[in-house]
Length: 283
Image 1 (spheres, rainbow, N blue to C red):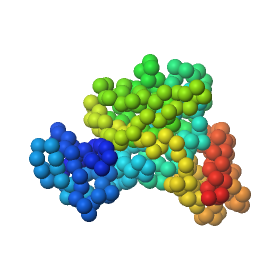
Image 2: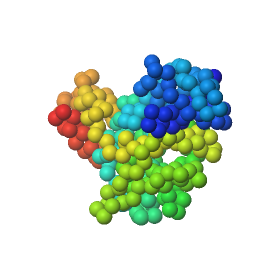
Image 3: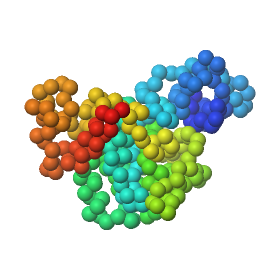
Image 4: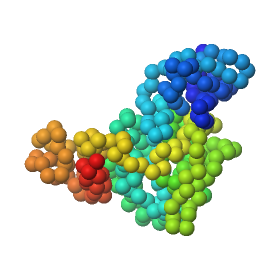
């Protein structure tokens, strides 16, 4: 019987079979190898429990916390409170590229920011090749578009504490009992989500809030030699050397195409690339 792992709480896994969710502990040889998002073969033990026998092949596995078979990573960052940290955002996008997961950028708290600020950042990320949605969990702006984008997909929400991830989940799936991170006195969010859960959406699909991506240390996931391939807009340009770092090499297509004009690498994206490259060089 086929099941879908939809939550992890301590050593226990919740496995959805049909319309019901059962509790499971995997067989001994599978312990530590079954993750939220996995599709599994199970035997029903009783009216509350199943036994996981096998794990079906995954299409991907995101790290920390490990979530499998993700269709879309939604990077949720607030424009204000906390202020948009595009270095953090670009780290999340690079990690998503490495693990073969498509990304969508959500800029939340439109109610606190001016339109000009939103349009400026939207231009940066649309120019890099990402879809961008502006939202407000307070007014509901942009949530219908977001709902349409994620319908029927398994989606991971990633971003800093206090950016509004959990508030957005509650808007998309009313009635879900999740804690909401508050902003401290210094504008930093406090992370409160502890369990890994795939929340079933009314329109189909699942959404997961990931505590592991609240604060990203890119060196845990990405090597220095990998980074040049993980800024997707860099791929538009050819370089003389296959191992080009896009920093000083002759014949580098990226260096000659940094600018705010359409089709080029935006200076803000190139700036964060250089910062991350230097960070990885020190590891």
